Length: 574
Image (cartoon, rainbow, N blue to C red; front, top):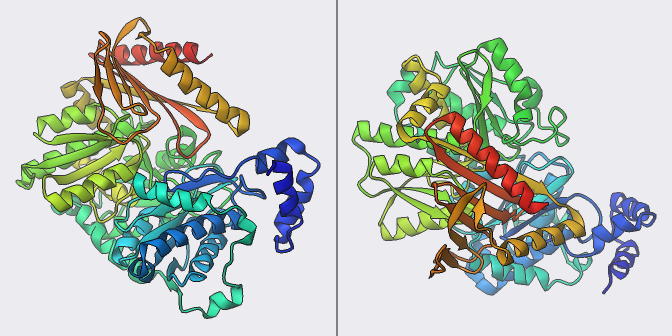
């Protein structure tokens, strides 16, 4: 069926809500926009989808939500009565249509006699992960577009372990979703039926209490916090999202008293009025926090994204200004503290393990090695970290200490199986208290780490290529890098290339070995000076990402290397 025929199907549908009907009429006068909304279904992959809100099969709306949930319901039907009995936990963030999408999902599940446990109001993604485990649900749904701009929303599916679905289950679920030819015809409970259905249960405070009880275990040195909790000055912004309630409670219960919230950004606002993008990776997201930090003379500024799974921070420099740290720097600081604190307390296990993604800093690996702690690299996507945690709990081969991705995602304790900015908020405050007791800032702590391990520097270049044309450009770029493999970057020779799609590791002399990870569309080049460069299309956004990483004897030298690599990559993509 052509996109024009699908459009006609939608505009002639009787049950289209008024807001979507109006948009469909407007689209008729703009063929280019109309084609983009209808040329292909919104991609459902890696157990979820994300897109612009609006009418059409390539947009986020109640019908694409119903289609995705119908696929999940059919998946659960095939798994049998026990899976259906356990049901699905559902949470949502502060975005436009998030509460409505959550209830549409519940109504779709109920049509299949599958119970849904829906949070009474907005909650963070990590609490949804926790709720799946706490309620012994078979699955979870999180309505969120994470740190994307206000025009977006999304839908993520979780497995019974509380992690995003692993590849085998995700592929099976995706198959069921794609088998649904017409999302307009998916049957759901009516609003009146939903109000009286015993298959839809509203949850809230009891799960909050249970989650916060587990968050207490994030603290390693309570004596330190008892001593410094009244001294550390902290500014926290939830960037108009879900982090405020639990973040505030978590800090208070840990013993931190001198923290203030950025008032303008403590309001749940689906338009994210005070920021261009509610992304703690962006320095501009800290504008309000920096202003308040300067007024309060704060030691540390922390921001969480709208669904509170990612955390960013800015540290005070010697001149009183603030510097936003990278995700790699934050991860390394936390690993250093966790391992050292446990070593001092005599609680560092012999089989300790830290997990990180293949595109995250090797500084973390160097730190782990000092403490005789194993570092395991996994594919990008926190579900791969969750899979490893599950494996270790089953075979007792390793004891999980920390997991992180360079994209500002951290997990301290495994009662959650996804990135958890609430846990990271509490831990990072403890780390800042540790340095403050020594008369230092987190910036000083980072400099100490560099002096000991070397000056590691990383940079991620994200190129946004939207729409049909953008998708084709991304595929063409990946094809080009595979067919015309670079032999050097910035005059530094490539010594080894890893292709995670073909599962090959090829050395400069042509020797080929097999990779043992699941397949993924990633290329990684190792250079003769110890630097590396990786390339991957984003799984959730219309972007292609280039990861640059190096190590040098000084910050100046590391910065220059990164600049050279950036110029080399830009030249190759022109």
